[in-house]
Length: 220
Image (tube, rainbow, N blue to C red; front, side, top):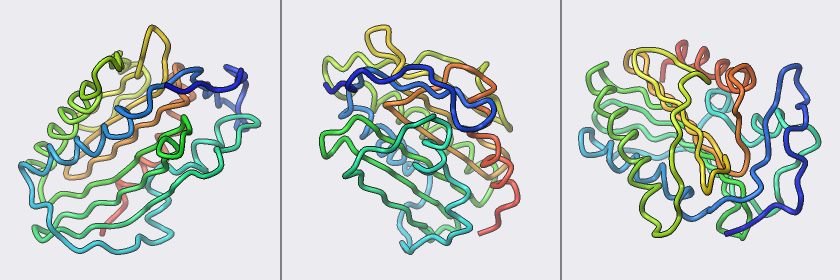
């Protein structure tokens, strides 16, 4: 368990309506593994083998990066020592994934961010992958005994496309992060972060909606 040193909670963000908040306490281990398990669950219904290659600058704009997140937090700079990875995977079944991760948990920090885009070969396959990711989040949050990290449904923060779900991540009554998974047609977008959280719809939508609009125009 790690704690921020008396962070300013609820400070206004740099952008007009940004109201991201710092989580005072998070439990990093279970959160950091959460989306990895979600993607494994999705792999049960899609071909996961493929070629891994660097993603383009244009593709980076589709996912939520650490710069995007901190741009909504006044005076906050990401902890030093964070590990950032971003790559594209072209699967043998014709689907494509963009996978972004920023992790300070492995080096003793309290900030974790995962964001990605999946373009499946059909809306049906995308529906399977969406369900697999959703199940995987629940599995990941429950895998660490005593973590007590639960999802508090908050679809009032954002709904999108054919299927979507938004939640606050909560431990001991304290919000510690957010998760959003959405599907429109054969495109899926996800973001999960811990160490900061949004509990106001306008601010959360300001962060996420531009990326949803961009992936609707994306063609791998």
